[in-house]
Amino acid sequence: MNLENSVCLITGSNVRVGRAIALNLSRKGAFVTIHYNSQKSKADDTAELIRSTGKECLIVKGDISKKTDWHQILQTIVAKWKKIDVLVNNAAIFYRTPFFEVGDLDWYNFLDVNLKGTFYGCQIIGEFMVKQRSGKIINIADVSAETVWPSYIPYCISKAGIIALTKGLSKALAPYVTVNAVSPGTVMLAEKYDPAEENYLIERTPLKRLGDPQDIANTVAFLIEGSDFITGTIINVDGGRSLT
Image (tube, rainbow, N blue to C red; front, side, top):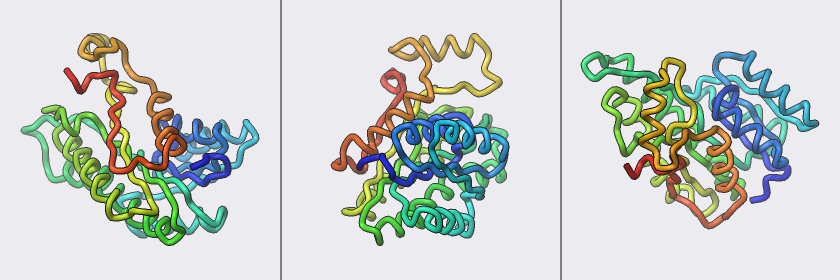
């Protein structure tokens, strides 16, 4: 797929890795839709970065755990650009959940947003892509889906579901839509990480550094424009950490 003049939606693209993906696809010529659920000012900042280069973009708000919001997001995009070529399911929540402290709210949070939200996006946008007989879906998973972290088990389970979803949808939406996933390792540390924890992560990584959001953005771009014969694949972008 040629990114020039393609229409791309990246969920959670107002901040962090999602922003990097949005900026990268825009630089490559795509019409980008920036999605947010809160922090509108951050979405405006991302849009300003794109528009300062002379590129056009769109901002949409929505709670991805609700099908009604997904339908509205799709309608807004199609009203402007008449199509949607790429969906990047990046939006997710992440926080520490010590095992003996996990409760119902934690399960609702992680499964509603990280897993159900991604499922609904694939279902609603995927149906539109099948009807137009073309499209690419890229889900952002996590290496923790396989190397489960004991203090983040609900999060890890939600990301393991993303991998299962990706593999199932690569068959359900074929032959018109490809579905793949990118599994980042440590790319952007949470605010509460201290230097000792950061050094530990670096030492556990064969490439001896943390990743950068651009590493994920470049991989997403490859899955869109690099080949149309890749589907059902999970690409780890973790500096080799999943091997240790």
